[in-house]
Length: 142
Image (tube, rainbow, N blue to C red; front, side):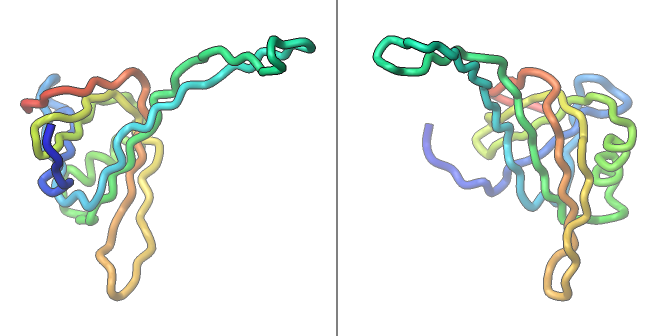
């Protein structure tokens, strides 16, 4: 796969009216994709072989996605994300890279945070989506 920049990366939210249909959310400044981590269980033993602590693989935390919006209070997509926060209902989202590949995941909006407002900066809101299951990565054709 050839290198690419993040330019033209898109973020989608599953449509309320039609399951399986995704609507693009406009004015996205940045996206942090899922960052899964696996827990590790340590095995305590008084006389371990080679004096090395044994570790066992544990459960996977699928992580979070963070989306920074150039906030527009009239943008339906931005308002929908805020409503997702209030509803606390799992929903499907997608991140599509410029090469057509990306992540599809189910998550719960766990934070909708307006950012610091300064005279020389764009007004932004940061949305955190906590994944509630396994994501898929592959070709995306919304």
